[in-house]
Image (cartoon, rainbow over all chains, first blue to last red; front, side, top):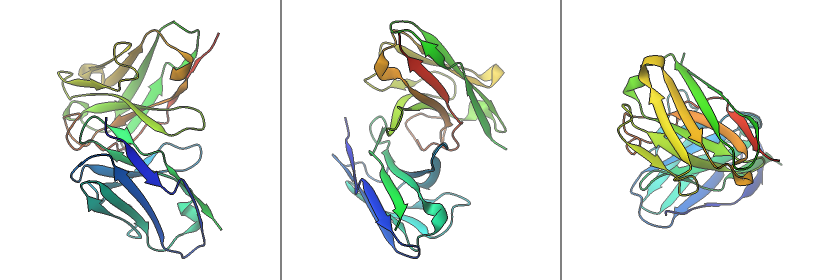
Length: 106
Length: 123
């Protein structure tokens, strides 16, 4: 099974900060990597698919990059409404999620 | 508007069975693979199972293989999850989600998700 290791597990940042979350796969997954945002009490929402493609309607301050085993998710300028937990997900071999990164406002 | 509405959750005793349903609307259901993803209380996301557009291809997480069965009825725009031999470790909010393609292994991103149905396994 492919393991996805996200870091950090939690993060506190100020409005306007640049925020970066990383996701490392236990083996090469090409670019089969997606990112989701989950706000408290809500279903997850797709933000980025295939490592770097921004889902329609998602603000451009969100971006993704990487390939093979190392991936990065970035919020260029943190907004109050971005408070959520973020998950990476691979689909190269079955489907697995990272453990999540809880993002808080400082 | 694409909409997914899960139902069938509830309190069930260990060892018993439960069948979840997901009613889909707002898109051509038989053009897309579908998936079930669960989230234990206060925990992260865990993929459970996926099924191709015509039901011909399915996949399961190791944690549920042999106990859960995914199926679909395209005439009714519905997705199902039959869960047998339930244990406390199956307690979770179960989401259905639309895949990005007709195959459960290609373009396997989940968008959108339903609001989930809660399954609690307890005596």
